[in-house]
Amino acid sequence: MAIISPFKGVRYNQAKVGSLDAVVAPPYDVISADDQQWYLGRHPNNIVRLILPKENGDLSKYERSASTFTSG
Image: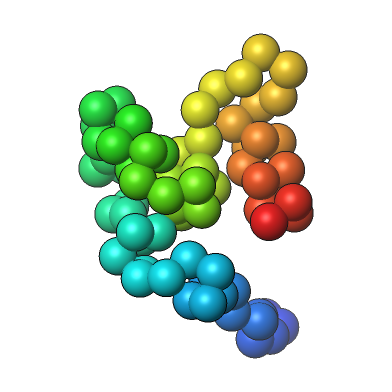
């Protein structure tokens, strides 16, 4: 039998980010390279930094995403 457990949701602190419009993005698989750049420049805490991080020679995209999430 499957064990199903709830998980704690993650939310932006609107006092820090202001309007949520600046930090949301569509799903990663519909974001073009140009769109990625636009979202990255829109706000330093845009979700695209987690769902579609830029490649880095030292870290995989998954490690970079984890690092961004934990340093947040």
